[in-house]
Amino acid sequence: MSDGTLVMLVAGAAVVVAVFLAVWLLMPATQATSLLEQRLASLPDTGGYDIDLLTGEFTQPAFERIVLPILGALGSMVAKRTKEGQLQHLRALVGHAGSRQRPESVLALRLVLPVVFGVIGFGLALLASGSVKPPMNFLIPGIGVVAGYMYPTLALERKAKKRKKLVLLALPGVLDLLTVCMEAGLSLDMAMMRVSEYDTSLLAQEFQKALNEIRLGRPRGEALMAMAERNGVEELSSFVRAMVQAEPLGVSVASVLRIQSEELRRLRRQRAEEAGHRAPVLMLFPMMGCIFPCIFLILLGPAAIELFAHHA
Image (cartoon, rainbow, N blue to C red; front, side, top):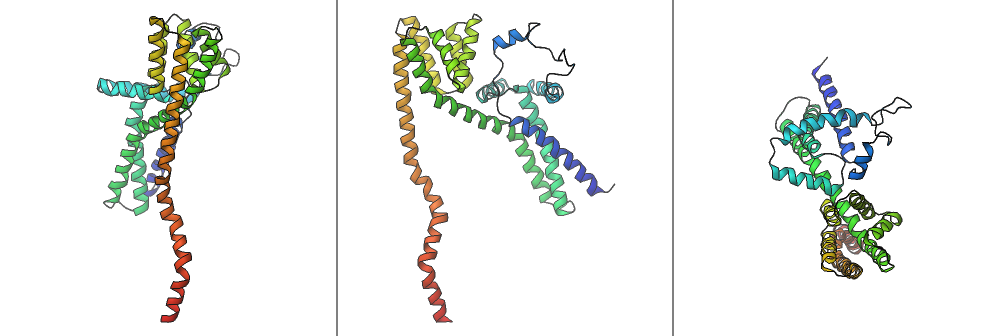
């Protein structure tokens, strides 16, 4: 077997592994299992088996049964040598992204993907140049190593940003529904249950998760604060703090909800106005690059043709 064929085989295998890991990391985030679901899964009649008793097949995909445990074990070894502050930041990032993976898996990916992308880069540089020639045979693998190291964190940050935007957009409507339910005579817990039943937004699912924790005996304030920390949205954290402080002080929760809803709508209107003011500045660069050359061509094109014709 020639060296070129061997390099192509290694590069192809590395590409398959990298694509497999990248697709898994970019999968739509699923909601993390709540405390209620964890306890129900431990019961014998809730379908919490690894093997289906009727068909004899595994209920979990092979990736979750084989690859994830390996990544978790490798990530645990890396986590022991990682600073606690970095681990806390990574846990918060995974929670904000709503990802189902563990921080140890992210650490393992940051260790594995640089090697995979470096091998891919080396194979591409070797195939492009035909032999080992600096500097391309060092530059492309170096770029691959840096990209493989940064990709897991950047993907989580992208998912977290998208998730925060969804929560922020759904927050005023959810607060209005909570206010209507409480003014109709429902308690806060019942209002949260109504929101989770009739609203399909991501924030309604978060309220359902908090309500499950409350039913299991967790104090309402702690469950709401955990929901705010899990999503990392400043407006949601402000609302939760106001709710937690209102009940011990005897303040009407419905009044607090109405004030918070009006404040959030005012902030959203301000953000829309700010985005509208930024639009002309952002439109300037496409106009300079695409529209202005066409205008100059139409206006100055005939004059340039006549000028060249006279000189000819």
